[in-house]
Image (cartoon, rainbow, N blue to C red; front, side):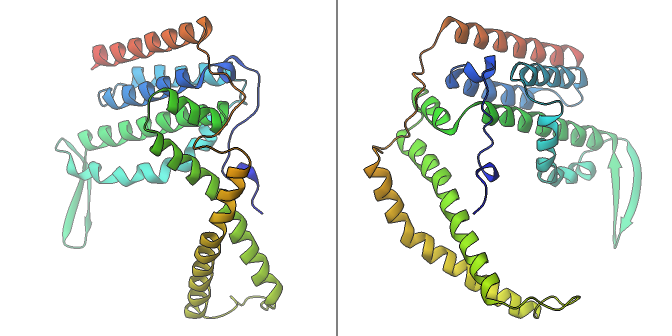
Length: 266
């Protein structure tokens, strides 16, 4: 069975960030991401200040040095999908190369836009990681509910999270069954042709779907027997204190200062 850490990145702690109300953390996270999107291209001072905001949050959360950066690198391939802006933005050509019948030129404006997109992506992903490692999933769901997110949407997110573990468990069982019924391939051999392996993989995906579909009723009935009534339960009372209001206000003021710095530097 896959470890819980494969999906649940929450790290238990007693830091200031851990103790904040999840509503504050959710709102600050959304404001941080929106603030990054609104910053002009090339506002490096503002991006640096946003990185300092994250470092402060990681420090207050007692996270190891480089923790957020190491995990945000996983999102880098998705940000690289914006590589086309290197060639689509008009500006002073920096260098050009031929690709078949086309000549592609990288402009200074395109390079600036691409670097800014990478900075926004990494900073936003790190902020989302900071949220998930300092807030348990039930608290996140309760925070969304308190923020008046539609209950159906919150329930769908909760079930999606819960059934990720069911899918992982079923996939682990299928892999163990295949390993128990298959002879190990000889050294240097792949264990069958590409078509054969594709057929086996397709069969396993189909079995995974059917077994998970059959199991979901048992899981749902078990959740009902344990008190599930449409929302996840948590021991957190979710009462906004003066500390929560002050922390939220300080974060909003810092984000406003970052936005102002970005506008002035543009």
